Length: 402
Ligand code: LLP
Image 1 (cartoon, rainbow, N blue to C red):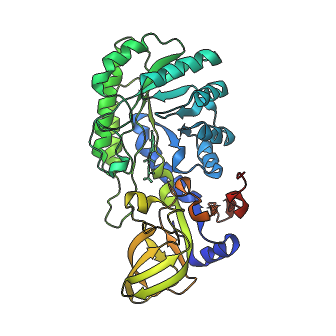
Image 2 (image 1 turned 60 degrees about the vertical axis):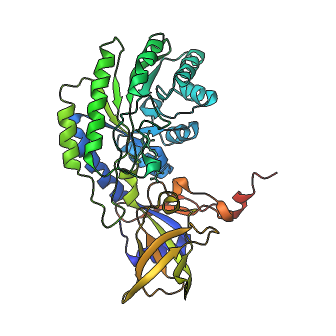
Image 3 (image 1 turned 45 degrees about the horizontal axis):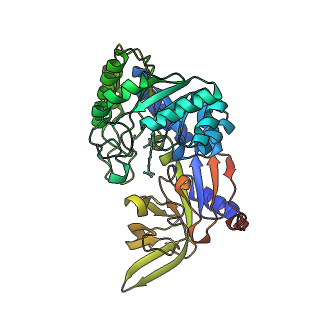
């Protein structure tokens, strides 16, 4: 998404920088692409709230008919606030607390995944206490290779998430005793930012086979939740995910399947729809290299520091011969760097756009170095700009201090 430089200049003046700018049209376009890809297999979409939990975005996606995937009572409450029915929320997580599970059960959340038998016992306990029937999704590791950053590959043998296939017989024996949290499906998210269709299809084949096997053992299996992970191109050399191949593959795999197929995309829906607007604070050239210091840093987008991710940087209203600059933030860490870019000669106070910041940027933001969180705006399809989150007041840095 690329609003005009003039519009960005105006936004920067109105809301100050750094500023997240999200584009509704791009979110809806990405949603349309995924709906189209999942339609042939009857897949339902539950948005992974962690990618971007702004209420303005949650409300938009709820109105589009999506469910929500949440990983804490905090996220569940955000979803409820955004108007999601509790029956359309899946509560995932490998370490849920008693208080969280009980609060969710009382609020009417029905679907919960579990990663270990003691976490399933927690669901039983909460179901009994709240006098509610809960539906439990057993998380399995599909053990498919996930071609992504090691931090984001979670379907492999050593991952903290889910059960290995070899552990299932014992687990299923225990689950036969369920009274309040009955086994009603499988969950198998295996990684994030994956750009090749094949591992998704492998995981789906694995899931269907296992689902039917468990059903044949007398469990009332309803839902096969395949998680998210659908990647977007960040770098110029990244090839986009082949949605046609994915769609055709899913269609084939789920022919004659009688359960509900659920997907939990986060990034794909929102990453490309958001930019981080920032202003140049300093231009330093010398024997150490060329540095362009901007007013956004690892506090607004941790992805480069955490995963070595590359988010393209574009200087607004500058042309001409390019030279190499390391674009860095003002945070006191060497890792507070967006990487090296070929850029035209910048001016001080030059506006710059850091691209693909709609997912896992503001949601992973922090106030490190005493930096209040930026404002966020959503550009509506006809161009109107809506402030969806105010900039934090500086006083928020100490308001809970005693
Ligand atoms: N479902 C589950 C159970 C998940 O753990 C995740 C992401 C998703 C769905 C959504 O995955 P997505 O479609 O967004 O790839 N902070 C990292 C991403 C961490 C993803 C964690 N789980 C990043 O900035 O790349």
